[in-house]
Image (cartoon, rainbow, N blue to C red; front, side, top):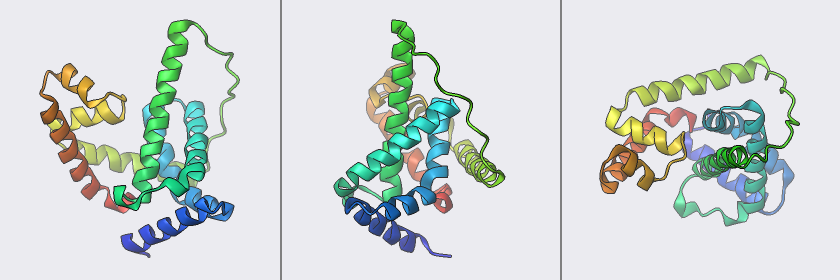
Length: 188
C-alpha cells in the first residue's frame, strides 16, 4: 500500500498530465477522489442530483485549471476539495437565489440510480469517519467549522453570528482543521 508521500507524488504527476490535457490522468484523478469529493459536496448541498451536477463541475474545473495548481499552497486533494466546497456553496446560493426570485426552472433531474454497494460502503465509511472526527472537537471548534464548511458562512459572518472576535473564530477553525487533518489522515 503506498504511503502518503507516494500518493501525493502520484497526484502531482496526474495534475501535470492533466495540465497537458491527458484525459487518462483525469480518469485516474477522478477514480481516486470522486467518492471523497462527492461525500463533501453531498453534505453541503444535501441533494443528490445537485451534488452530482456539482461533482461534474468540480472535475471539469480541475481539468481546466490543472496548470494553475500551485504546490506551495497545499496538496492536490486539498486543492480539489477547496474547489468542491466552493462549487457546492455556489450551488446552495444559486438555489436560494432562485427561490427568492421565483425563477425556479422546471425540475429536469430524475432521481439518480443508487450507487453500487461498494460506493455506498465507501461513502458510509468516509461519512462516519468525518462525523467521528467532528465529535472529537470541542464545541468551540466544531461549531465555527460546521458553519464555515457546511453552511458556507464566511469567517466574518461566523464571528457576527457567534458574537465572537474574528481572530478567535479564525484560530478555532484553524486549530479544528489541524485536529481533523490528523484524525482523517488515512482518508486524505
